[in-house]
Image (cartoon, rainbow, N blue to C red; front, side, top):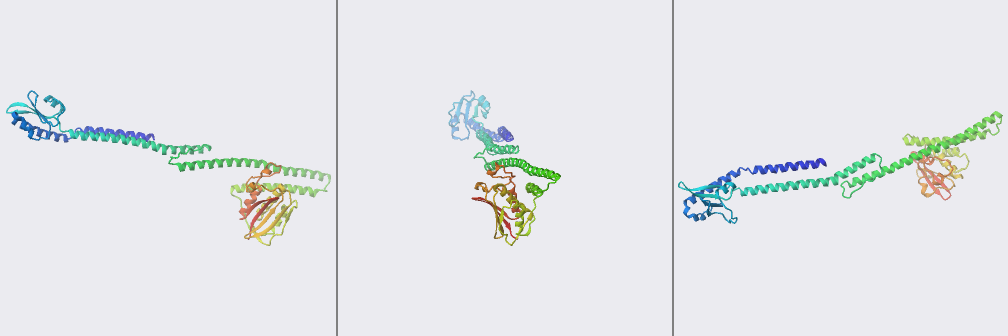
Length: 433
């Protein structure tokens, strides 16, 4: 805006210099010469008539010379006045005429000077009035134009430049990470809509930053939790292995199978934890792959048997149909659900099947405390653990149901949780071939 005001000031100076130049040049207008010539002709006519009628100058009243004049004798005493409506009481003489630029000439009769005739105006009165009017008009126009330019500049600055600079500064603060500073909105701001959009963007970025911080914190907590979860079975394996070595050294092998089975279960726990973490990482990187093939529904019973290490699952017969799944990923889904039920419910688990349109509905239900309604839509979120389990001693990463839901969606199926009055029910919609 400084350049704008500077430009307006320079243009204003140039304009007024042009007006001054016009005043100087118009003061030397060539039309003045033609006016003077006409006045001289009329002056000569008056001089001739006055010389011819010197003894009776009153006859001059009968002639209209078109100019105001006076006739003086040799002593500069006015002997005739041809001035219309003369009320100024001015004294006339040849020196006065010379001083004021009035045309004059002497009246002679023969070779004798009888007096003088003086025109009481130079004939440029109308031209001067027009010229002065033009100068005054141009000056006022220039002042008005400059004032308008300055007022318009103030308007542009207030309604366009300042809001734009505010948005620019706001964008700079956003780039610096200052997301808690609100962008002030003016109702007369021409950028009102953009200002509102910028502030909405700030709020979204602020919310996104907070989510990112929360996610980072939860990921750190996950690493700590997984470290603890992995340490527990590893410690169990180590202790069991040392016990087996001691018994083998003593030649005692009576409960060898039980100890080996314990080691196997611990390795299964580790496998589940590592698989969940690995699957979550691949999903974040966009590298997770699912390859579906047509399989008999009976494969589901095989998967259940694999993870039912407590023999608490009661399953109905599977329908004689083909399902379109990735067997390895479906095993991961069912394993996570059964593992959660054992961990948090500790009850028997019922599994039932039903064909519904293009899906085989597989329902896995336990009879534990269930999940509150307000948390039901959250239990399949990444890293989420229910409020009643977050403070419990039960170990968990909050990845099991998240991965199960993600895998079902990648197999074109769906995972639907439902809280019963006496337990939690998970329904898997498995695509039919």
